[in-house]
Length: 295
Image 1 (cartoon, one colour):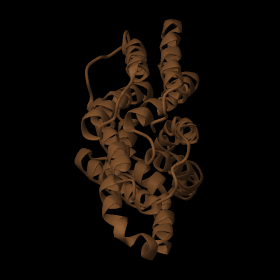
Image 2 (tube, helix red, strand yellow):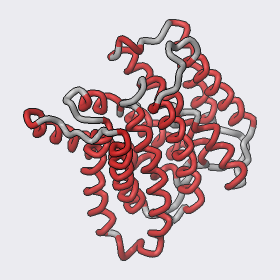
Image 3 (cartoon, one colour):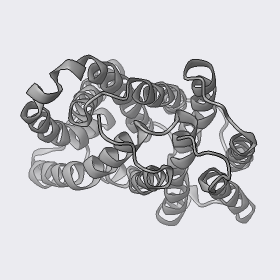
Image 4 (tube, helix red, strand yellow):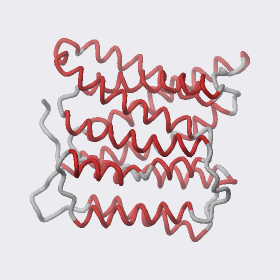
């Protein structure tokens, strides 16, 4: 098993990976504009990375074969989470999907406390309070409170991701390549099932097929894969509540970028205070403690 990195290094990896992930909605919405259905977009953005990580996993099979059972469980639950979240981005607003997913730090902390024996100090509870207050402000006053399919998918994706981060921390020995391989394959398969259920399995038309697939492959390998490598690697060393709060960096990036590029999702001036609260929550969590570090 690898030597555990410092809390700060692992936390920075999550923050940077989350910032990249905050831009995930852009290729999703762009590919949707080509006529590709939401579920098939998720397949396109994950299958190439799945193939690459499968080769990586096969190359390390003999060395890590004894730990694959951990990877199967963690990878499937994480894949379920990201498939639900990815499809939700095409079924509801970007900001709404992101906010509902990021109730996840609350579930992650509760799981960490009751399943992993994590000792959440006052900073963790203050950070959670700040993040929930920020999320509430962002949602308050938004038009159309009636729930849709995207809202439901985003909510349950947060639960699934919280469970997967707890599994990563608890297993500890799950090989990174195997986890990522199973995760990417699971995302594609779950997205296909969702697409079949909601009738969303159309590929882009023949005129756009080549450029669309090429773009999807490039984003999958050079954007999504590096972001998830950083997050998965660091999640093996950090408690899920901490991971959940640090991942709120995605909220900031997603909200700011969506408000800039999607006029219909521009935030009122008062709601920018919520973004400050969310950034503050991650900042509180990252502050060094005088106590003996616990990651």
